[in-house]
Image (cartoon, rainbow, N blue to C red):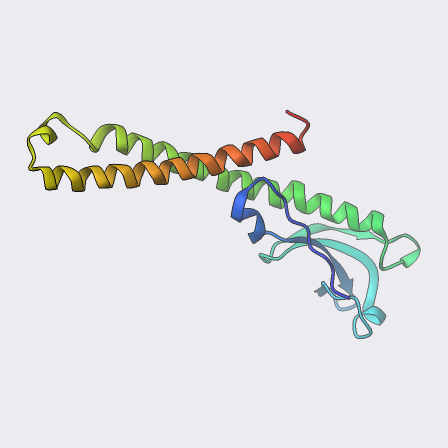
Length: 160
């Protein structure tokens, strides 16, 4: 049996780069996502928060009565992953996307069209306008992704 990972939704594709799980602590201090005949005898009855990207938490969560499948300890580890790793990393990525959207919009507002463009030959003007349309489509797609993520986050957080 392999530990089933957890993803945070509402952050687009970046959310799938961070799969959180409660890793089993083994007798030599290593961590395992696998519960099976090879690992079961070596489990010490503790979980550690872990992420598919390689991050691990700092706290060991003891399993009640040494039960290696203690759901309470597993939930505590997943809570640490979400609070200490996933949300901060994904929120930073989202802020980066907002910054890129702002930069795209500034570039469009400042550099794409000027009064001198009115006197260009039609083919040059058409090519320039193709670039404007392409940049607008990219900015619109980014804005829609960010809007959809914000709606999903608001729904998950009860409208907050």
